[in-house]
Length: 407
Image 1 (cartoon, rainbow, N blue to C red):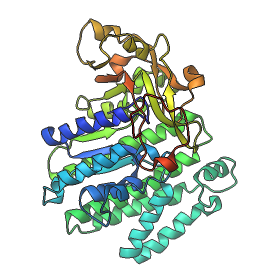
Image 2 (image 1 turned 90 degrees about the horizontal axis):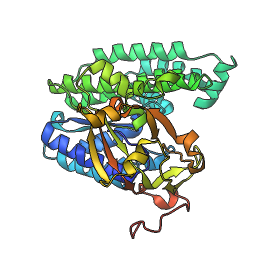
Image 3 (image 1 turned 90 degrees about the vertical axis):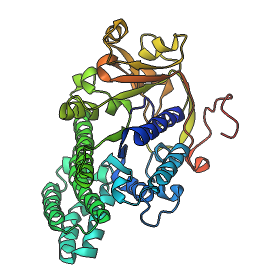
């Protein structure tokens, strides 16, 4: 399930409603989001009734990095509260819905998680791990600085150390006896952290390379993580896995149907289709006007921004002209409409940053909609996402006068 912006409340509401239906009626077993693995793990434990995270709000506190509002918001609060309530009806951990993060930005947190685990269970291996991860000390460890220093040959790359550590962790985990399903979950979490350190090192080392290189490393990592989640579920449940993914349209929609492909960019949607053939269902979301929560620059404060009317010649412009304002397009059907939608048109993408005054350059790309998704849900007028701690997360911005009371 995609989204054409990272800060639209209506997209979260729609994805929540659809996810609840798929969980309750179609046997889906997990949610995987475009969020860091370590930040999402407290939600996983909260939803399964484990650990000391006793409230949905406390389970969301690990999202401390920009953009906090993307996951630490009122809709997520309601959703994980629902998941905990749903899971509480099951006594077996196996039957409970899992919650996972697909992203790799959490290199420091993942490295520390590996060390903490080994210090508890394998002291000798922990000392070796600390020594290997100390390779990053020249960068203090600032991932961006590491990318600069390695690019300029001012420090040695840590590729060998993190790869060796991952292989040894893999061997150690597979040798460890699994006395319970909860232990199995913990071992899966720890091994994935070692994998993140390895893959994130590659990502940050490539920061000064052409943009498509880091993009591809990240989306390949997300696809690999999703595949590992599927394998983990199938190993513990002994049945085929069904996983719901939440991410931006730019990750979910098949990149081969967009101009991303011309820039040598692949994405999660493409890789999932290639690996799983006919089983994935890619659902895109779009909107025309309304408001969005976004920042004006990376690491900057978020504000409520007015979404500009869509550009002429875009899919959003076409949909905005229709009498029916909210609708679902089944792009799998072979009819006159889907044939028309195979023609390349502009499509808007707003991430965590929104630049309304440079919309064409900053937020539009060409796509063939009918090949990009299996279906698309269009919600013509949408509202901005509400952060949990909105007083601290937001600055005064372009708040629409028509926004609901209590916003």
